[in-house]
Length: 212
Image (cartoon, rainbow, N blue to C red):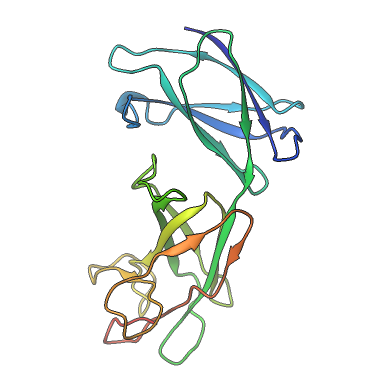
């Protein structure tokens, strides 16, 4: 155990102050330790630095996820095995964006639909450390949704909202994004650093559950 100093900087060396960071103990194979899955929350100071004290649980490895939250569109997800007295620099990159529109069979916007996104593979084609974590967004008055600050990689976009009803969860299965209405399998959406991937639209056809 001991104090560890962590500094968040952009690609050009600019510190990121007032950024919240989850420090999450994990096992050696990257699985969160269940008793500490929520982790510990810290905030960087004016120099982009925060300090935490390492705790090595009996069933843990001494490894940690550093999960950055609300960093003005910058993202980082570093796995570290710190030692007492270490000074760690985390290089932040611009996150990617996914945007799209939800419409009904008449082409009208669907307002307030809950849309979900989940990373399937990271930029290197590997299963992400935070596999299974799902992000949520809701469509605005134009039927538009937006996911931002995403790590580069491949994502799926889906909804289990009842688009013909009151947008509550239903048992009708998942409505996934597909590149066309004839595609049999859902498509993965590729996210790149600092790039907006737009036009990820879903059309609900009432009575058929088909999407476009």
